[in-house]
View (cartoon, rainbow, N blue to C red):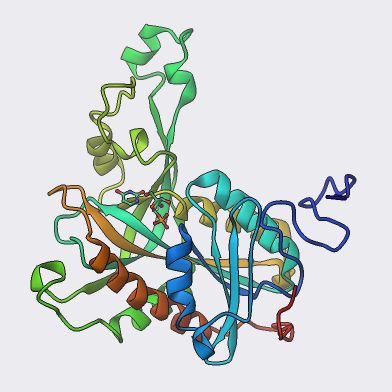
Length: 320
Ligand code: R1P
Ligand code: URA
């Protein structure tokens, strides 16, 4: 691909400035970004762009889909990245490398709910997120059984929480509450959808083991995990797989930026409940579409309402 090999201090970029995996370059990605897990959701949200479609789109060989358009004339990019921490790392670092000025990144994802009052049909806005990470050494064949039984080593690491940006949180919650869809007999048991804010989220590094799902095919030592999470982080409402790492990388970028606001990243998240972990209910395809269209447009609305101080002029039209 003709990639430069000497940029050891910066994500790999080709001679034209395209990053190695997301494969976008300066002028193609806006300062305000919505990141989602799948391409169907990305395209649904893009229907709410001005003109009903993106101005720029590109799907990389690694399946990162970038759609850039405007909402109420404000440039916004939607990036579908897939799932999990490692894809978040590629996405945040490579987008940061091609955007000038402060960035706002909002994750719009699905999640499981640990709180009976948040069932399918609820969309939550977390204010903080912590990580639940599988502790590989605990499972290593050399690890002493005594250390396991004494608790000296634990099967899962529960990190400290990291907050989202308050202004972003509040704008997301307001936009959702202002546009709750009407109840329909065929959706959510005939009940109206609802939005809730100030929620605590946990991002796990597996959909399975570190979200407490039981699977006898593997030794996961997770039968008490949800109970432990509830004890150590009371009020935890949702489980998904990316928000914590986005907050962590934002904190890390902001620490590196020091007083240079143009390198800062602010974060937010909107999480649609697809799995009710109390009742084992799961969302239907029609319910999913309803939530994605509502939540997607609300995130666009919220992002367009937030001012970015000293925002560089938009590079429009976005072109390859
Ligand atoms: C797992 O099914 C995936 O769904 C959630 C989790 O965070 C994980 O990525 O988010 P998305 O629906 O955005 O992918
Ligand atoms: N996404 C997750 O990560 N977990 C769930 O239970 C549902 C969606």
